[in-house]
Amino acid sequence: MSQTKIPVWIEMDTAITDEEDTERTTLQAAGTYSANGGLTVVRFTEKSEEVEDTNTMITITADKVSIKRTGGFEMKQVFVRNQPTENVYRHPYGTMHMETSTHAMQFSPLAADSPAELTISYTVTLNQVQTRKHALTLRVQEESNG
Image (cartoon, rainbow, N blue to C red):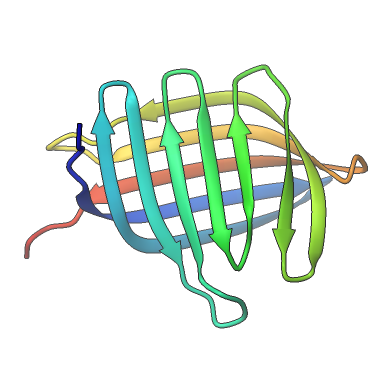
């Protein structure tokens, strides 16, 4: 069974708090959105002048979100509320072990009159040493045909 891929505009905001400092980043990209039953998939490519482009695929179900990145950065990060998950993050400067603890997740699917929105609040421990708070907000708006 095939799913229709809808062209979309994606904005992903992240805030990472380390003690009292907060670093905020915003990524904007064109991509695709598809939904079939209880599964939603968002795909886009992060362009970079410093490293190879990174292809990102976000899969969303009722109880789990996974973010898979390949290219300049590689990782598969899984978010399950109140359940720690582990992965390895590979980038041009080395490899890091990541443990993710998801505290809250909320998803509103794409509708004719409103964008899709995913919010995740979590902590990440890098290499079993440094723990930081993260907040991710993904907004997905259907591209207008002009």
